[in-house]
Each structure stands twice: as C-alpha cells, then as structure tokens.
Image (cartoon, rainbow, N blue to C red):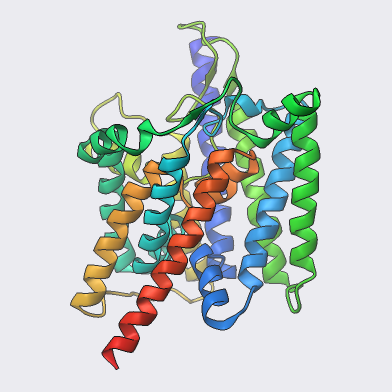
Length: 371
C-alpha cells in the first residue's frame, strides 16, 4: 500500500467511527441508556429494565466480536484489551474510583458527552476535568503514582489473559473456537435474560440493547478489519490506522477525552492528528445534540449550588484517574472490553458496579443526614 492509499484508508476509518458514534449518541439520548442509571434503578427501585438493556448490548457485542474473529475478520489477540498481564489491582482500584465518581458526576463518560449534547453546561465542566485528570494519569503526575503502585501488581501468563485463551489451553482447542463457544453461551444467556424481563420488550429498550451492541461490534470491524494494514509502507510493520494505541480499539471515553483536549490545545502541532477515539467524542456529542434538537428536548442546565459543583468536580477527577487505571469506563470495559472476554475487563466491570453502589449509598446517607 502506498502512503496516499494509507491516508485515504485513515480518512475512511475516521469517518466511519464518527458516524457510528453519532448513532451511539442519538440512541443513548433517546433511550436513556446509562450504566449508573441502571444500577441506581436497581438500588433505589428494584427495577432491572435498564440493566437488561446493558446485558443485551453486552451479549450482542460479544457474539458479534467473536463471530468476526471466527470468520477471520479480526484478531482477538491484537486488541487494546489483549495482554498477558492480568492487571487485576489496577482494574479493581480504578474501577471502584470510576464507579463512585460517576455517581457524583451524574453519569459516566459516555453519559457526560450525551448530556453535553442535550445542553448540560455542568457536563461540559465534567468533560474538561475528567480529560485533564485522565491525561495526567496517562502521562503526568498521577501516571507516575499509577505505575509505581497498582500497575506493579499483576499476574503474568504465557498467553493473553482472556477466558477463551485459558479455556483453549485447558481443552486443547483453538482460541477462536473457545471464544465463539463462550460468546454464544454467555451472550445468548444475556440476551434471553433481557428479553424475559417484564415490560422490557418495548421499541426503545430493544433499540438500546440491540443498537448499542451492534454499534460496538461495527466499531470493532472498523478498527480491527477495515483499518488493519499488514505492512505499513514506511515502517513495514503491522498497524491499525487511526488508533491511539496502535491496536484494534472500539468505543471508550476516558483516554479519548484526554486525547481530545490535547488535540484541541495543540491543534497547530502537526503531530497531533485525529484518531478514532477523538472523533468518537465529537460524534457522540453531535449525535445526542441532533436528537435533542429534533425532539425539542434540548435544555440548558447548570450547577444547582456549591455542593453540586463540588460533587461533580470530585467525581470527574475520580473518573479520569480511575478510568485510565482500569483501562476503560462503563463503555470501554463494560462493553468493548468485556466483549473480548478479557479477564481484566470482568474485574473492572465488577469494581465499577461496586463503586457505583457505594456512591449511591453515600448519596442516600447525605440526604438522610440533611433531613
């Protein structure tokens, strides 16, 4: 492939990611898909409807990912979440921080972007603080602390730390076969569980579960198949064009927020280029805004008082630091990562949910104390 062809391919990858992200933003705006909201509904009302949305989306993304892997379209061992290091402590601590932070900030990273599109000025502040904290944890002061503490604790395996690789080693089968089998077993179970919910089978609920799962699957194809170049014309090395990590990526919103701020602040620096993560941030905001404007649900929103401001600032910081430490957020680990059946992703998701429950209990305690 010539350099001109590589440039054209990169443009195609970025446009495809942007369009998919707009679809994602519009779906979330319409259906109120929200991981924090799903956990909150269970804790406060015993309502599992939005959790069933999330479960169905995971099931669809998981089956889609390993279906493409079985067809040879993507390589599960070349994704952002594929590593022989099982960083369980980073995922645990980071996930707890992120989960608690998203309660204080009225939503996770993706919900923050969707709320910006709907007119929330306080979510714009959350975005800025979360991006700064995330960048500091990628390359700055908290990155030093992260590397010197939680990242040191890990279990090293001879194969990538994923359930399919472990099962394949135990049974003596190919990892893609084990992956497809597990994906069908877990994914179909989640989808059936979602469909069995009372009052779940409405258009919006199905749109959230099936639509978001399909968008994540499509993003894996864009990054891992369309954007895959076996031999870069200059370096002669394998590359996944348009990604920040050089590996196949799907949807995630912590590190991409940091990279978006970096791109905006150093725009004149020609080394700062658009990536799949950056265009995804813009796409979600614009998709959400488009739906909000069309449905006339766009509303300006600001902070209620000093306490509300403080909660959001602290929450945004926790999400930025925790999301990078855990290598993802409720979408990055909770959908994209877990669709690859990464062991680290399972720990991160469990920790995010636990942190979210703790945050909700903290809010209830604050309300009761003020009465």
